[in-house]
Structures are given as C-alpha cells and as structure tokens.
Image (cartoon, rainbow, N blue to C red; front, side, top):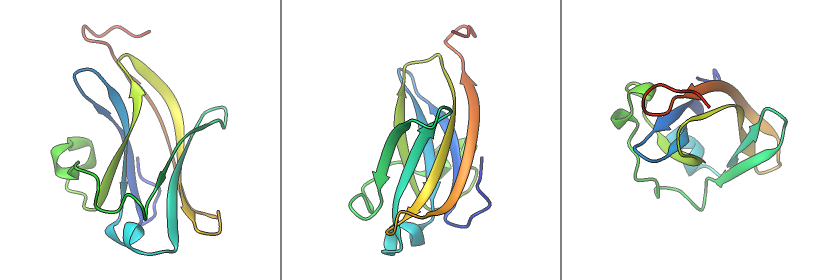
Length: 121
C-alpha cells in the first residue's frame, strides 16, 4: 500500500456504491512545494491511466483519509482516480513525479474489488 516514502504515503482502492477509485494519499508537503509536480498512474502494461497535477489541485480534494479505513489515521491530501463500477481488478503503479519528470517515489498495488454478492468478473 505504501511506497516507503514520507510523501507518497499510500495507495488503495476506495469502493463506493457505484464506483471504485484508486485512492492516493500524498503528504501535505508534497502538494505545497514546487519540487513535487504530479502523481502519475500506470497499469500493469505500463500504459498511462491518469496524472494528478499537485500544484493546480492543492487543497481541492474533498476526501479525508480518516473517512477511509484503508488509510488508517494517515494525514495528507487524498486524491481519487475513478476506475469504474465494480467489479474492478487490476495492478497499478503510482509515482510521485518531480518538476524535472524524475520519479521521487513509487508504489504498486494489485487488487480485486468484488461486485455486490461477491462475484468476480
């Protein structure tokens, strides 16, 4: 779930009634400093799924980490990248990217989110 970095604090699926999203928790410092440019998400084939620009999204997330038990009592800015309605499964790599396009921290996650009733695709 975590990258071992103090700035890319965790990634986990967030399940809702109609959508599954990839939750990404970054430190407050990562969204406040110019050195941290974006969070980039790739699938298991290396295809680009999404990017979240940190500076232009600073303070815009309405999600609270403590509202999602998968993030425990973590603090920071929580972003959600929609993946689709359940069931959803996959393997994703999330990287915290510098303004020079260097990877500062990377974490990977493989998961299955079951459909209501417990069925997999």
